[in-house]
Image (cartoon, rainbow, N blue to C red; front, side, top):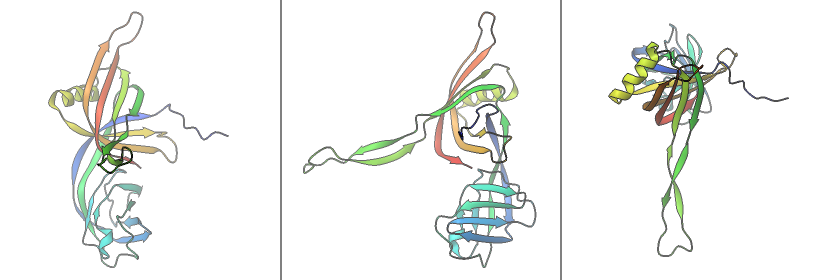
Length: 217
């Protein structure tokens, strides 16, 4: 039996960031580097947000990391190293949380061109060309949609005109118990359209350059 994921229902969304006032975590527990944090009050975070944690003991709990929401009062994240036990002094967290809105009537979405650069380290004693891996380039996002001139489509054009980099989220299988969220930042590089066709519909083709990391949550 195939485990293929249906593409129908997939969304591309543009985010708007809002600052988070510093909040206190009530408990922090870890298994290896996976940290589970709980709050007394709703934490106000979304999966993919990357708050900064400070003040925890052991110090391995501290730092900036992308989180996955478990419930309104709990979330997980990967620490940079294993804390080695429950927190004896818990952290506060602050940062930015993103609210996402669908790009209207998207029909094709593709993340592509992800590659690692090759750095030439060949020297006079090399028997052949030698390389080491360089930085990861997370490529670009291409998508098309029915042209509706909706508020998000208008915002994309404004972003391109003004050179704005914004957070985006691709949501796969959004109605399943375990949807896949792909989060990244990008800036618009191309908007072709609207395109009119005889006995057809108005189309819009868009491209955006991804900058920084891609997070799967």
